Structures are given as C-alpha cells and as structure tokens.
Length: 281
Image (spheres, rainbow, N blue to C red):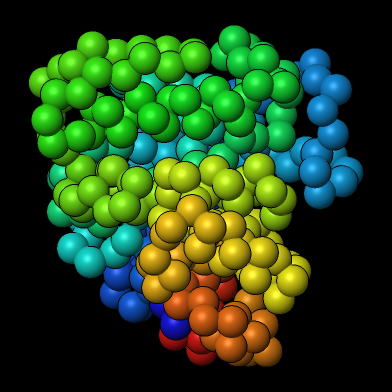
C-alpha cells in the first residue's frame, strides 16, 4: 500500500521544500495539500469537526505554488490537492495552472476536487451555495475541453470557452470519460457524489475513510452502471490517522493508497511524526 501525507502548510509550519525532500527520501508516496483562499472572520458556518476553527485554516499556503516548489526538488514524489475548491476558481486559469504543474512534474499531479464547507468563503467568490456542485461539475467539463488533444469548444450552464489552443496538456492521455490529470473527488458518500465520480473522475477521496465497507459496494455499482472499467476505480482515503489495523482493513477492501494526516507544525514536530509513520511504509 502506498502511504502519502497531507498537511496544512502555512507561513508558520515546515516549508514545502524541506518537507518534500524528506518525504521522497523516506519513501512516502506523495504530498497532498488543502486549499482555503481566506476565512472570513464574520462567519456563521460551523467548523465541521466541531469547536473553534483551527488557526491554520486562515493561513494555508496556495497549494499550487507550494506543490510547484515540491516538484522542483523531487523526482518521484506524487503531488496532489486535497482538495481544490474548483467552484472558487476561474476555470480557464485553473486549467492552465493544473496542466503546467502536471507537465513540469512529469505527470505526478493528482487533482483532488471538492465542493467546500465554508459558505462565507464561497460567497466571496460569487458562488451560490445551493448550486456549487453543479458549478464545479460545469467547470470540470470546461477544463476538460481545454485539455483535449484537439481544440474543443464548451458551452455550459455556468461558463463557456471557444475552441482554443491551450498548452501544455496534462501528461495522462484521456481514459474513458476522463481527460486531464488523475482526478479524485472528495466528499461524503451519496448518490449525487457517486454519479459525479463516475462521470468525470478516476475515483473517490473519502475524508477520514470511515464507513467504506458499506459505501464502496454502492460506488462500485454506480461506477459499473456508468460503463466504467471496474479495475480502473481508485479509492484513496484522505486525512487518515493511521493504525496497523486500519491499514489492514483498507487493504482487504482493495485500497492501494492512503493519505495520512500530519500536524500543521514546525520542522521538528513534523519530522517526528514522519518517523512514527515510517513503520507503515
């Protein structure tokens, strides 16, 4: 099983270059970074985990800039977002960022897609909360048009693009309905989420990894009904606090990669946790 990590990198934590070099040297599979552009101080959205919102949420580094640094000092380490809030981006700009990072890292990028939880943050980007999932789906389709091998126009409910010359292209070739880098959709199990995964992604990134015994058969059924290859489905539990038993359970379910959680801390603390996680490699 491949073990990757995620961390809230901020202006107060270990630096991306130092962390990336350590991860590759130790044999970890990848580095996934979350995204929050800002956290409005006056907000009504509760923190999903309960209690006060942790300090790091309002201090996160831009994931694409940080991953660009990580790409420059590594050769094998996977690079990913966990997750990109697609609805909060201009899709033409985002398609260029993603394709550039994937190209410069020789295809090491995984696009984790999500829809967010902070209503106020999304609202400042002009996102209507009730339609954010459809907006994200529409923007993914627009980006796929820009990543297509031939100039391809797209006309959607929320945006459009003319047939265009748009390079570089992501390294992976189109596979089934998916065009672009490896794409995983995050979120809680449910029929709408599973339909979107089968429509435009390579798989699912379940946060925390709970309840997979019950939800995986449902996802596999939706996947099969969409005509997707059963062997192609990828499920990557995300932000997991690992144990030997938990990882063994994932392996029994056919899961091949897990993303474990690092603390949003300085170099000494983070490297200490990596030492402890080394037993799972």
